[in-house]
Length: 126
Image (cartoon, helix red, strand yellow):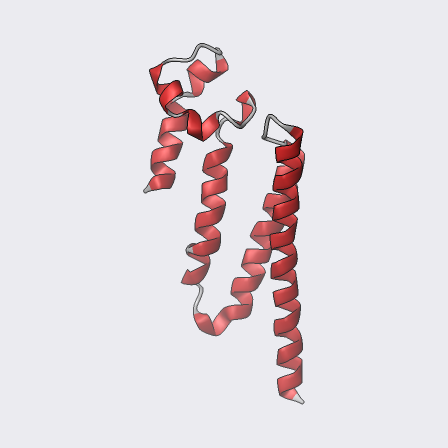
């Protein structure tokens, strides 16, 4: 719901944002795009999609396949961290650095959980 709403609002703001001529809609939705560069006005929708996938859609994978859940989450975090580092969507350099750092911390968390799961599986076999 909120992803569709935010994406449609941002799509409606495309022309005024690119023309740098704010209107009532762009001012009302500034909380969605004001921290980002004009070319990356849509990044909030990407961020929300990442959060939804990591907290919701990954849970659609059956619990018996918990390791697959972790691998999928790790891949999503990896792709997002790379995209964040390449695109650098924020206006302020500090925000870009902080976003990449927190994304890497989350990636490290998933990687360490993967390794722990692997080692526990090995330990149970012997």
